[in-house]
Amino acid sequence: MEIRALSVIGAGQMGSGIAQTAAQSGLVVTLYDSHPEAAKRGQALIFENLTRSAAKGRITKEAMDRAFAQIRLITDLEEARDSDMVIEAAPEDKGIKRSIFQELDRICLPSAILATNTSSLSITEIAGATRRPERVIGMHFMNPVPVMPLVEIIRGLATSGEVLNSVQSLAQAMGKTPVEVSDFPGFVSNRILMPMINEAIYAVYEGVASPEAVDQVMKLGMNHPMGPLALADFIGLDTCLAIMETLHEGFGDSKYRPCPLLRQYVRGGWLGRKAGRGFFAYD
Ligand code: CAA
Image (tube, rainbow, N blue to C red; front, side, top):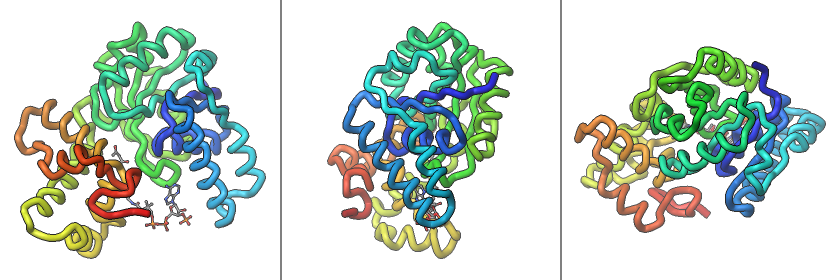
């Protein structure tokens, strides 16, 4: 099945990045957010990214204008009804995602594929909110979406082979490399990345080193492009905590216990870059 019309639900950093990348690969995109101001902010971010790419000569001015014109903001989810496929990129909360999938199942064509960009939750459980679990799949992009080549593809218990093939082809058409992994908490990416971030937070919590020193060790010693704490701020500390909780609950193993300092920062609204403050301060 060829996918030409795509709806993206959620216009935060992931949703706007997915919408931009899809539009740049020629798809017609509708972008929805339950908060209209967030949709406007997502659109502005896309414009900024495309403008920077054009200024750096990575894309032509025409390609930039074409991609931007391919993205239409919608304020009513019902307008997603004619899409061949929907990618949901809402907050990492099972209840929110399941209710969006229930709505999408009612609104969308029976042939439509419903994908979730969840970074840790069970695809099978999200699919269970619909009457079409065979057409539900996980499509986990990395941040920043326009730059990172990986997409984890996760089949739920009932996902059909035809849907898997279509979504793998779509990822490739978007210039990404799809890697299929199984439906386990955190998949592969966050099963490995998040405990590393959590451990970096424990190192600060236990007074082993300052946030600056922890990040320097990992950047200069392990060649990571960003230190784990700068990366946590970039991902969002609320998302990091939600993923750790999914790992902790899903595996029932204390090695996944979220660091109390991470909880404290989230309680205080220090959510990282988007809040202007996390392990580091941002303007
Ligand atoms: N959107 C689009 N493009 C961006 C961007 C953004 N938000 N941020 C940077 N870029 C582009 C820049 O324009 C630049 O492009 P050119 O080289 O063509 O000029 C390129 O990326 C490099 O950017 P910079 O020179 O500004 O900075 P950098 O070299 O430090 O790279 C980075 C920035 C790509 C973000 C790099 O630091 C990096 O790879 N960091 C790690 C990112 C990572 O680990 N992501 C995964 C997070 S985990 C996740 O997403 C999964 C999850 O579920 C939590």
